[in-house]
Length: 333
Image (cartoon, rainbow, N blue to C red):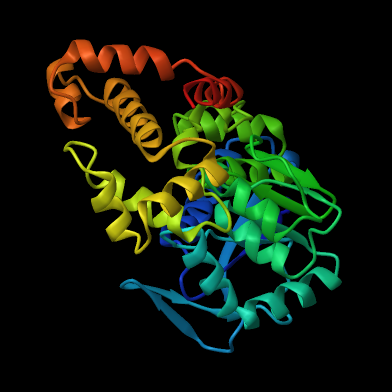
């Protein structure tokens, strides 16, 4: 009788506020890997078993209409535990959610004490960091949370540009799209690189990408400790196609124009007007890369009356590195 394939059990921790896609996609990737593994020589086959686990003793959990049937994490016999990303609108919103996830933090510490492989995705790296398990370790998270994360968890060696970071029994990935990269990493870890590469091809994914850097938009990196900046950013993002005044922005942020200017200079080293220009450039980049809209319409959507004027602004800021941004803004002041 032939030996059955080696079985690898992967648990996904489902919890209130988790990103549904981040909790489901890893198991879908593992299912694809199982199919492909079936075509390999018997001695090289692996079989992934995926299951959703809970830390609160409940048999099921509903997240925004999607129901997860849960087994208890405590006592689960698994080879790795995936912690999906956390749904949030801002870093302050994320911090509040973390406060409400005390049962999950306790469960993660108990699991890690047994030496299990702990895999976090996107913003959930902050949940693992809250437990202290990442102190002194390298990790990554969604690039736009980097500044906030460093302030909250200074003992973690954050590599915000990396897509997947492995440090001992702790593995982390970047933005929500890197959940797929993380799942492929699991395939490679337990099934070998050949299976990982083949699974990536079937998924039409680049199996060799390693950095978040090409996706970073400096204008929307979350700035820690500045709720006024985040409030202003959301307001400006909703009005990039229209004009506004400093008085209107200050009123929305419940502060004076002078204080608002000072906050922006302290946090971002730019004025609100310069920051709005940067946001508009980031929007134009996205529209140019992902749509076939004519330049005139892109210009209008970015709040400029004619393409020539916006072209000057775009050329001024689009190609600058973060350091060059700061240097140029300093010269403007």
